[in-house]
Image (cartoon, rainbow, N blue to C red):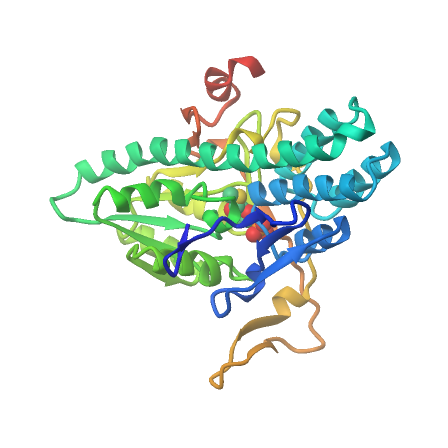
Length: 364
Ligand SMILES: CSC[C@H]1O[C@H](OP(=O)(O)O)[C@H](O)[C@@H]1O
């Protein structure tokens, strides 16, 4: 996406043909920092500590991590060790395991001498595929926004609520939940986006709001707990979010708080859509509530907030008593019954095994 007139992806291969540069998202919206990842350890830290985050981007970054490891040591043992090191960084987004499996499936049968070139080629393909998948998701989601716009008075804005960041910063480019939003804005459809701040790491306040502002999309930042109230008062026409893992039955795992938005949307008869590329579907699990591992992150992410002081420094400040432990489940599961539709690259599926199988018959 364009940042200050220059086009950026969230990750790119360096001129040395070995290391990758990423946007270190921990410092947005206050500072735009690019860092270089040169070892598989660098990549593991960047994923675990959320320098990069977002299911598709985590997968692409891990794929490059495998390529970087092949550069250092392309043996079977090193390949397996890199798979393990990267897989243990974050447990919930299925794209991580999907990308690592893609790389190992490709590399293991190859002679060691061919693994480096093949790894970088496949990692680049996965990155490019992500962009194309998101473009398609955008087109399929745009049709939904157009339908809603057609039911409004001329010039009336379509009010969309989104949670967390499923934007271009969560992918290589375009985003998933934001792809239809960007296409609608480019098509001149009057839209407005309510951006959930998304505690505790504020991906909405710090990333989605930055994306919307950067692309001139009218938006309003709101606290996580305001969404239900706005829905009750007719202020929201649709909800669209991303996902870190969606089951074969259509259960959706996404950032903590998504389930509560889905409940409020159901109670107010507001369509609740989930945008996802097919690598985010875990065909091996059916029941999201019992089968998807929910990442528990440090309580310090709840007890502290990071921001920019009035004198321009970026600082972390404690918001709760030292004596108060904090729990921090990073995701929750929205049952398929609360999901209006799954916006994939192949079209919009009903949130069910049959619905997904209709779009992905090869998975029946
Ligand atoms: C397009 S996937 C985005 C997805 O990932 C985010 O989680 P995190 O920021 O912890 O990686 C959030 O669940 C988003 O919906």
